[in-house]
Length: 113
Ligand SMILES: [Zn+2]
Ligand SMILES: [Zn+2]
Image (cartoon, rainbow, N blue to C red):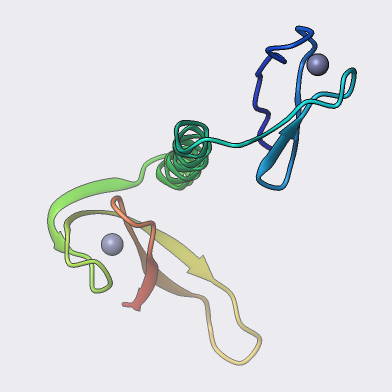
């Protein structure tokens, strides 16, 4: 939820947002949300997306190796983490797979060994 702090020019109370309208709960003064305020809202949303991408970067196990020569098949950027993971299955013996994770977009893929 995005909060827009703006004070009523008539009585000084904090105005509330309702759709694209700001209104004063004390005196009833209304005004349309200006483009400056809308830009502010967009930048707040953008910051949230960046935060989520940081989380993706951290979601790599201890001992993961960063290889700048591996290219991500989804975004085409170089720089991918990889690590080995043991997969147990009932039919066959345990197999070790190589897990790759793109540092740019977080795309994860697995390769058998
Ligand atoms: Zn007011
Ligand atoms: Zn990628």
